[in-house]
Image 1 (cartoon, rainbow, N blue to C red):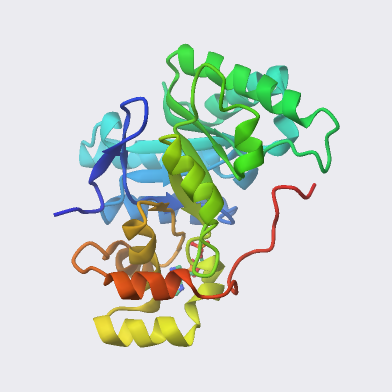
Image 2 (image 1 turned 45 degrees about the horizontal axis):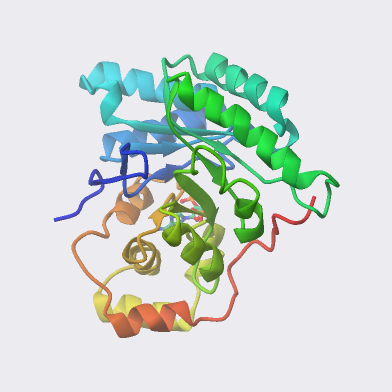
Length: 284
Ligand code: A2P
């Protein structure tokens, strides 16, 4: 049976746990440290951070302390970070990676992502910027200091700017929540062997109040959060829910012992947008 630690292979053969823990908006050092510890203690083995979250150091400390106390090996925990959108281009991306490695003090990362694409909407040379960024990412990958590289918030037209380059992104981490499946991008990724990860998988909590989802929660004897996260898992999307509350950390991960029917999957797919952030990658 699939579980929180079940791994799937990325397009370069790196194995990634199919469910992760997100740390966006956990800026407080103690809260970042404590909640990552709680996630690891409760079986999560995939932790997602980013330079933009301003918590890389505390997330990394939590991972290291947990490893030491529980005798868990580094290779059993999957760690992701990202280069922010102010660091696009060849030189800046290389420098951003060094800064992240300096903060995290790890020998390697499992996954490093370009957090946000350059877009025609705010960069006249956006296609070239994306290619230069990706050239730096490829160099970082070849150095062996990251097991895989990918992107985040790249829609199909952004992916098009780098898809012919030497290394295909292993991951695209985009916003996915009920009413906001971003099917064009998900289909493009599937076609190119790019794994989709979901940020804001619960719509930052906004997605939790919906009559259909409440009905399904009653039907399956689950919480709405579990229905949503299960819907993402069944779409082969890796959700990265964030919670600082241990009960919810446990609850969110408890989605591997039931299955949504095809009809219920379709019903959730067809919910009109309602819990999404409204942030477009084509806005500055
Ligand atoms: P908290 O950290 O207090 O648990 P997302 O993962 O989409 O970014 O959503 C995160 C938000 O949803 C946070 O505000 C978090 O609050 C809340 N949240 C996470 N899991 C649950 C849950 N199972 N039930 C209710 N709220 C949740």
